[in-house]
Length: 305
Image (cartoon, rainbow, N blue to C red; front, side, top):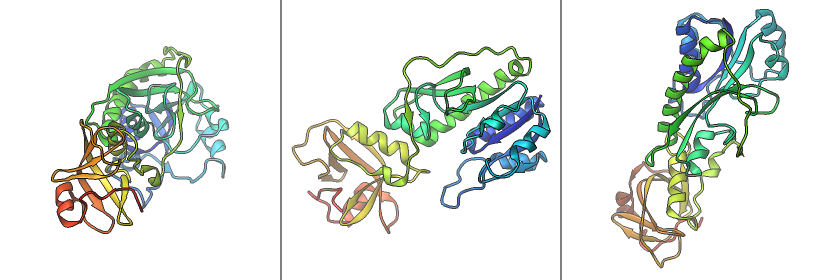
C-alpha cells in the first residue's frame, strides 16, 4: 500500500511508526519545521523519516508550488494526515485511489476544529478520543472510519491527555490498516451533537476569577506546561498559575482575593482555589506558599493590572 503521509507532533510520530511497522510503502512525508517559540516536548515524524530514509518536505503552504502534481506522480493508494497543521487542498485530497484520511483528536462530530485536547479539558469533558475520518473540503466533517474512546481523569493535563490519545491513535491505526488496504473498512456518517472550536492563543489563558473554582482549574490544567499557561495579574505583572486545586467552601471575599497565604488560597465565583505552583513574570517558578512569603499578598485582589 503506497501511502503519502502528512504528519506532525506525537500522534503523527506514532501513526507514522505504525505505518512503517506495517510495511506500507511511504514515498514521502510532509511535515513542519519546528516553531522556535514552541516547546518541543514531543517526538517528531521527521526523526523517523531520517531514520528510515523517507524523503520529507516542509512547505509553508501546499497551495504554492507544484505539490499536487508531485503527489499525483507518486500514484498513492492512500493519503494520511496525522496532526498536520495545514489544510490539505481538495486537489490533493482527491488524488489517492483508496482515499484520504485524517486522524482527529476528539470523538467527532464533537470538538471539531483546532486544539481539541485543550478544549475538552476547558469544557470539563469526562471522555474524548480519536477519530479517523475521510478528508473532505469542510474541516473534520467527513465520514468516520473508526474511533477509539479515552477517559479523562480529573488530574489530566493537556500533555497527559495527549499522550493517552497518542496511544489510542496507535492502536486504532494498527487495527484499521489491513481493512483500508483491502478496502474492507466501513464508514459512518457524522451525526448527533456537533461542536466546533477555533485555535487558542497565549492571551486566551487569562483567568476570570468570577468563574467557579472548577472552571478555573480546568483552564489551568488545559494550558499548563508545556503550553503557555493560565495567568492573572499581581501588582501589574503577569502571575502564571501552573498548578492549582479547587477547594470546596464559601468565602465572602470578592472573587480573586487572597484569603490565605499558607496554603495560598484565592476566592472565586464559587468555592476557592489553592494555588500550588505559580510564577510571577520575571521570577522563577515556585510553590504558592513560598511566593506568598516573598510578596505582600494578604487580602490582595488578583487580576487587576
